Length: 142
Image (cartoon, rainbow, N blue to C red):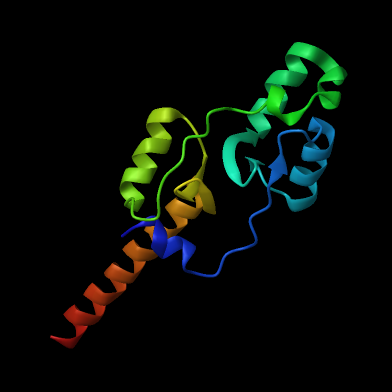
């Protein structure tokens, strides 16, 4: 199955920040929405991802002054992106290999979604459980 299967299901709204936003406002958004990362958009294109890790490293390096920095100074860039046609297993492998937990999904330069490792693992577990239930039903019907 592909990333499209996840994006086509019910999903919360994807929130974004601008590169020129302050780290303080981005942190407030992460806390308010209880999310771990947010795509950074400039002119409609994904130019990076701001994660809790990025903020933590910046705070450790610069102290409280980091909160006044612009998102573009702290974000991970360039963003590692995927397309809707990438398989879920390949996306999980990419996340593991690149040590990231969030992937913007793009169509050309336009972002069409944002998936987390939790989204992909949940989808995979749901499929495994459905297959197991189908096997149990088949065995019991025999």
